[in-house]
Length: 98
Image 1 (cartoon, rainbow, N blue to C red):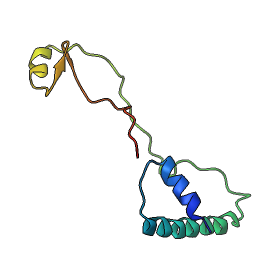
Image 2: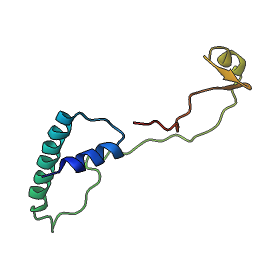
Image 3: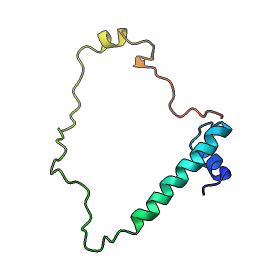
Image 4: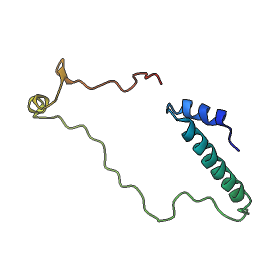
């Protein structure tokens, strides 16, 4: 059984807040998943080759080529916020306290 302390630690690492009821529910759910994994670990896979893709499909990629924009001023005029001639966006690495 996953303990409530382990669930709280995982939630803290994932930066999510859980109510006490959610902590109990997730402890039971994670325990069930890990118990199922124990069953899967019992399956004999000695003669099974590793497989990463079974459909035969592959990604089609195009060459990444930078193309100068002829209409930069027009595009920048449509942006919500511009600073020093560039688009200003919110920071993505802002630290948030839980």
